[in-house]
Length: 108
Image (cartoon, rainbow, N blue to C red; front, top):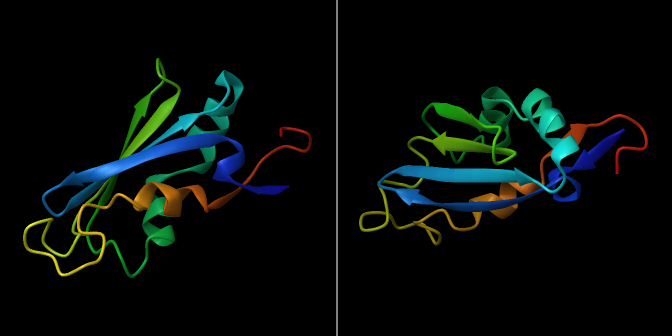
């Protein structure tokens, strides 16, 4: 069945220049393996199509039950240069949590 990431994780985001940094953290330890399998760099890149114009890198943090993504070229040049409403990418965490993924029946 498909569910949004809001059922499995919480998130934080911010910026480093023109790169948005988005972290998702599993709400339960058993959700982490689902996040690893389903929330790939490729899927995140597609989810942010039209916003992220560079590479998406994924870093696994199993001791924290978290994944961290760097979305390069996604902030219009960065906080001091960008004309975007959200030049620091603070809303990107909420945007990622809207992604829907497949989970086994009865997971949540």
